[in-house]
Image 1: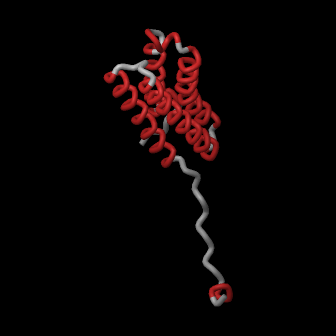
Image 2 (image 1 turned 120 degrees about the horizontal axis):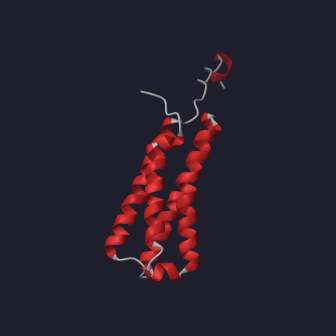
Length: 135
């Protein structure tokens, strides 16, 4: 498998960007556009998801990338929570709700897979000494 050279090639980043684009477009209309705090919070969380993937990747270290993917996954969960809130408040149609929820779950799933693949490798554990096994 070829190494990814730029964060824009990461499927996780592309998926997060697509979700952010959909949220941005949707939040410019109707009741959603008039609910400033919710609109701004969900846009910021969506932008944070894709930005943390990018920032972690460009740090160039596996441990930092893993940490930033954890943060990105948390931001994706925030987006999902706010989608539920917007739906409960009557700001989304059933179709909008289901589409955004499916997209946000997919983003979280892809980030989780990427996160597992870059999990920092731990050195193997040394076996216990014979004396310590007797304790």
